[in-house]
Length: 398
Image 1 (cartoon, rainbow, N blue to C red):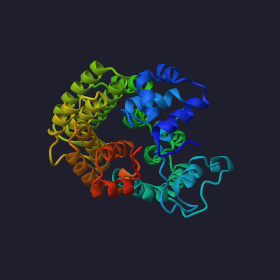
Image 2 (cartoon, one colour):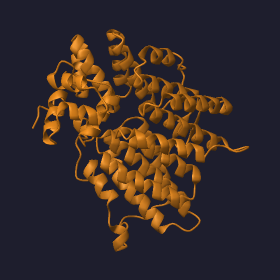
Image 3 (cartoon, rainbow, N blue to C red):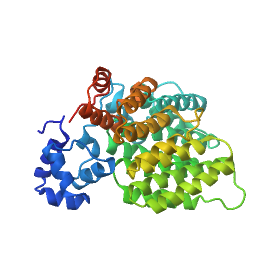
Image 4 (spheres, rainbow, N blue to C red):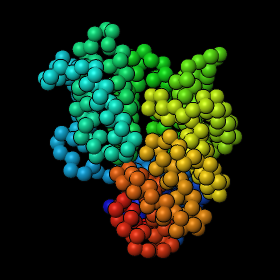
């Protein structure tokens, strides 16, 4: 096995395993052979997320394997964690007819558990989710099975959301295949609910999941089509506009990573117009949308395009009282810190990272970009507070 603390060694080992030369790998990934050579030789210790995604895809691995992203949940017992989530997702109880042997589950019970799970997700509390999701999924499925025809759509909607949370959580835990299963189950439940806006929201989640796997060529048209199918015709509800705007932002993010800056700019401009039309921040289907989200995703597209100065100027437009969930705010700060580090603003980048860790200590441990930024800073200087942060979040110099 390669030294898993060294990105270049991991790339070389995986390349050799599939009998590729450095040039063949570069050609497959659409990156320069010079980048591959420098990464493997250790003269360059990192690259943009887009380039690393392309290299991972060319090696037929997930980027989590390339970056050693998978982080286990702390103190996961037999009834919690990834193993328990997998068991809940692959349960055969519908085949046996025995959905649960516990107390009857009401719609109100499932609603309370769903609200709690969303709060834990947006707070980045993945350890908590590892404990509550397995039982919550099982209970929601039992409630759906036993629901009256009148209540069934509401329970299906709640089950879809729990499965959506599960899929998104599994992405952060470095479990892409299991995440895909969860999101597919979520889409099926959303379709059973009969709510077209929820089904559209789940398509946005599928696009995001494709993005995390580096499948930009699929994520971009999927999000763009989902938005086009939901494009308002005449007067529509505020939730409709909000979901439409969110899909535009997902499409813009995907277009940016798919090296389609013109498409990204058009989608961002349309999202900006929708946000102005709404006139207020919304959080329909647990998908926040408004001007802060437009600013956040514009920053992200600029970071992906390596326009770091523009990204910082855009980020300064973020209102101090922006209605962003904690995980979204932290993700935005990750873009800011990365841009600061790339522009040589090392002290500012470290301050941003520490502020992010202070606000979301569980979230940051499972994120690739902050770890990359810390690794970059470690190569420049090693103040004690930087070394301490690296140890806490599991980042180290390559």
